[in-house]
Length: 212
Image (cartoon, rainbow, N blue to C red):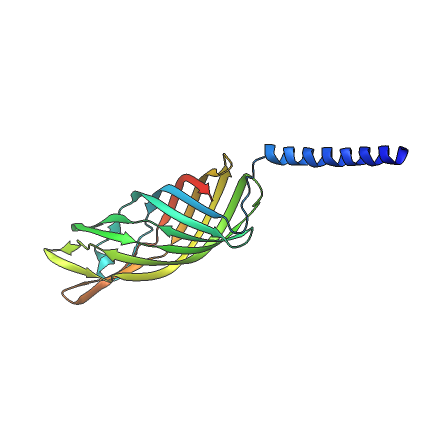
């Protein structure tokens, strides 16, 4: 009888412990990120070109204005800490010079980054990233002295990133992010090179995201 009583008590204690652990787990939302998770973010970004020029563009003191636009990105967690992020966005910039406005040009720079996420199981998760961007310059409206300024349509360059996600619900987080992207285009007038325009923006963004 005593052995049966001990067995029953032991079983009851085991069940109680298991139930308690399950209840505690249910009461604590899964705020971490893990291998196989998708993170989708929508940010408002400020694009701040760090302009450099060469040739005639330097003589003309060519500059590029800032822009504020939306940005969408997708991150796939390869492991608990390593993710791959694709950033999508486009902007239009006005180019100025000492002889006046030169017009506008569209910039489409999809960027692919490999990231390392710190504190993946926590609610406050900093990350760093490095990768490459391909920039497409389109809808070129640049001109000087009434003549069309031709530009190179494509550019490849490196990209660096630092950001942080802060979980506010089980599947929702807020995000702040800063990137440095290197991009450039060569310009010519009447078939003659007038130099290279280095845009190389710093991009600061803030937004929201969801984990899937």
